[in-house]
Length: 200
Image (cartoon, rainbow, N blue to C red):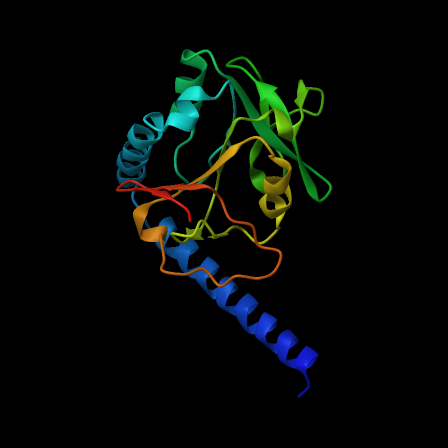
C-alpha cells in the first residue's frame, strides 16, 4: 500500500469513526427526557450569559433548536432583551446564508426540518457576526465538533472572521477527542451544562 492509499484508508477509518459517534450521540441525546433538556439548557444559558465575548457582542448568530438540541430560544430572547441583533442561518444550496430576525419574524421548516427565516428576511454577512452559537452532536476540549454530516458549519465558521464561535451541547456530548479530518474546523469556546472550555 503506497502513501496515498494509506492516507485514503486512514481518512475512511476516521469517517467511519465519526459516523459511529454521530449515531451514538443521536441515540443518547434522543433518549433524554424533556425535563432534562430544559434543565440542562438552562444551566448552559447561565454559563453563556457570563461569557465576556457575548456580553460585548452587538450581533449574535444563533440556531433554531430542534428535537433534543440545547434550547436556544431563551438565549435568543435574552440577546434581544440586551439590545443585540440576532441572526439565524438559512440553507441555500450547500451553504448557510444568514438573516436577521426579531420576535415577529416568521420561521418555516427548511432543509432537514430546521426552522429558518424566509429568503426575503434581512440578510447579513458572516463578517458582521460578533458571537456565533454552533450546534454539535459531539465535541472535544480542543473545540473540534461532530455535526450532522453536511459540513455546513465547517464551511461557515471560517467566514465568521470577526466572531467568537461557541459550540453548545450537553456535558455527556463532550468526548476526549473527536476524530479530525482535514476539512474540520474548531470553535473558540465549548459550553456545556457543567463547564466552559476555552479551546486551545
